[in-house]
Length: 346
Image 1: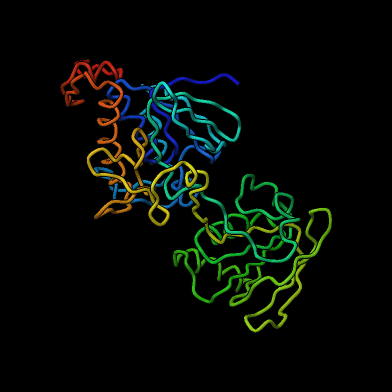
Image 2: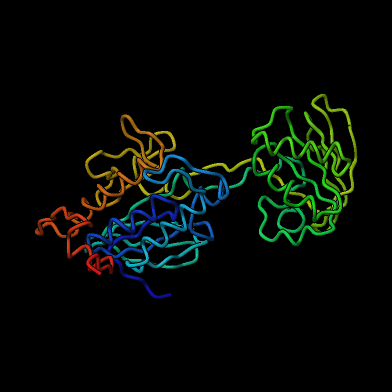
């Protein structure tokens, strides 16, 4: 596979990674974006695409998906290339300066700087800890819904007590033949409205609910489920229910993954940075958003936007040390207008 040459490789296609494209573009720097998730959006799309966000400046309310859609539109003028569904596995310095970046899909990049905007790391779903559960994964046991139609007419087992579990209970109640919801506790981590709607379905006899319960055993063959055994906290069997498909929503576990092997200083599961450049312990590698740490760090999207702006100026100075980088305002600068492809004078 050929090597793509660019100014900056951005690792992470969440809000901070996307805004990094914008800030670099304003400074006439080209970037590519790589993410292990198959679509742009990061945590916003993976965790709360339909949930409202209220703390984006000048945007009183938007969903996670709407925020990502707006950011994608905002960066259109800069033509960033996206390489999604592939994890960055190697970041190595080049003898002539800059870095060589390789993904698990064997895509290669040469760049002058790297920005890690990977949120809390590579998110992996927390697995169902039942012996033999992995034999059903991706056949009849899933950790996210990709095609709701595949659950039509099925005897569906849903595990979890958060928003994702309840949202899909309500969404699939009209599709599945029967839904059985199993939650390990009696307290819910979902919004009250969803919990109340779910309990209305239970009261109407349209689904089954087991609280303070867990799965002891899954039965089936060739990856296809036939039944699940449900037990209480004391290990007593509550029921054996017929199951065609199962969805488990235990949340996502952040993992630094290959980042831990790139020679960067790591504190806990975060990358220490300075607050002038947001550069890591390795010159030329920067970190913005939830993946970094510094005194007073607040894990907010708006903080990540600020970090991306300062990192862009630092990267411009790193790549072109002899050029003076002037702060120009998008409101008045003809240069900014040209780069953005806008004509404010009509």
